Image (cartoon, rainbow, N blue to C red; front, side, top):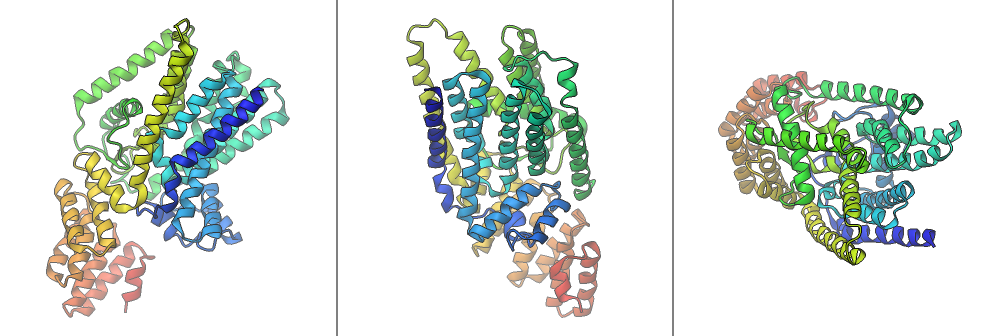
Length: 515
């Protein structure tokens, strides 16, 4: 009977997830990494090929670490759907649905609690913070990594029941697959140790730690390699440019804000920018909350082991993306909560279940409460997913939901430019510049728009400013060359095209105009 119930619940979870996110099949590619990873990526346009497979396993691309399984999945989508975005979106939704069912299976096997497991899995599926991971094609890597992460947990449960090298092998292989999808899986060995303590109830001794040494070693290698790749791709003026004290403060704020958005999922945005000045009061209050909850979880570790495990699961899994190693202008991201929130969901659900024992008509009250929460999450997530329909709706949402979001305004300008609305694009580009004068990208875009409007002199001013802000970008130098050509100074323009190529020998627009 239990197996029949589990099968019915699994099917219901899968279909529920597909239903809430079904409109994704009508969404477009987003010019926020989708263009780099899929639309304009020449290495995957032939679909699954031998050349493509070799590239996927050997070449970091656009500053990411080697994540071949994610690339292979994109190649498979190209083979099946071509560049029709609806198919790529639905692949994401199918993986998210599969992850939901996997999580339910893992929790049921670990806790033997059918309905608690179902509720946590449903919350994982429907929570608005998880919309970004499900609806964004470029976050395929996170979905696949989570799929193999949960697969690792599933095989690990069977391994724990009767330890053997044969049962350990699929655990290790799934872990490697998770790493090869997205290196965020470096925290998986630590997560397994938490599982050992609760709910698996294993004694944490030397043997338990030793069995995970191969996984910790793989994590160390993957982490070091990823750090070096990102540091090499992102220049010193872009990588860890924020002082450590501010990065630490932002990490505490992020931990607290993720918790807040877990219980109050409002004003969610695809982009949260790093503030130029840290709000000390907010950082101190956030740190106090994190430290207090951490201390409480340790104090009550014997009475409430699920509280300790759930909280430290949340802390540990967010650590690599907490912003302590800062890349670029982003302070936090909804997608980072995809796996960490399992710990929060589990801890809160287990606490409510335990503390409500003995209450009159407990099952009815809990069922109504759970249904209300899931319906609310489904409604908000369905609405949140709709913002991912196209660039204008997405970046318009980011601009509306956050304050002084110069990246959102820049992307919104580009979205309008792609529709041919140059005036609207200029307005948003200039708004981005007004908020963040040191941000180089909108200057370049304004320059090209003005050049298209035959305003070469005005365009040259923006290109000059952009080149001064970022001497490593060939685009403004190329733009200055174009303004000189428009002015009849073709020979001088060649010098600028050559200079652009000296910055980036593969910059195609300059190559076409040299000589």
